[in-house]
Image 1 (cartoon, rainbow, N blue to C red):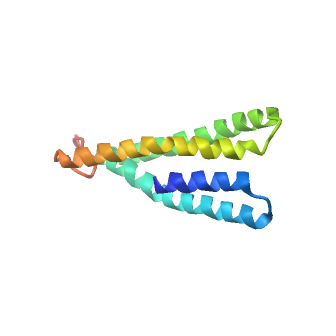
Image 2: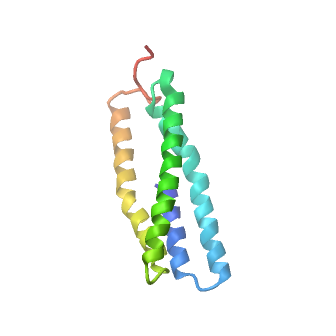
Amino acid sequence: MLAQTLFAVGFSTFFFSRNLSQLVVGDIILTLGEITIVPAASGFIANLAPASQRGRYMAFASLSAGVGGSVGNYFGFKIYSLMTSKEYVWAALGAVVFLTLPGYAYMHMMKKRRLADGARPSGGGSST
């Protein structure tokens, strides 16, 4: 949730920026979000996967992120070229990222509930 908040604030900073130093601040905030989310996502995937399939889960997550980044960039630039007021793309990105925060809160509640029910914190699943 912290990383998503940093992403949302960083994208929104680009929308409100009026000089180079404000853009640099937005970039620093986005970088902090990236630094925060990478280990958290890797840990989440490792805990989600059964011990015998962690490599497969990590590989699929990396593949889906790579494909998503490629396809997203293609369609994103197509849509961007059609926009008349291009500065609003940053406001839209910030809003979308803010809207994903309840999903992360829900996942956190599911994890807490699972741990309270006595499930193993390291992912569960049989090793067979």
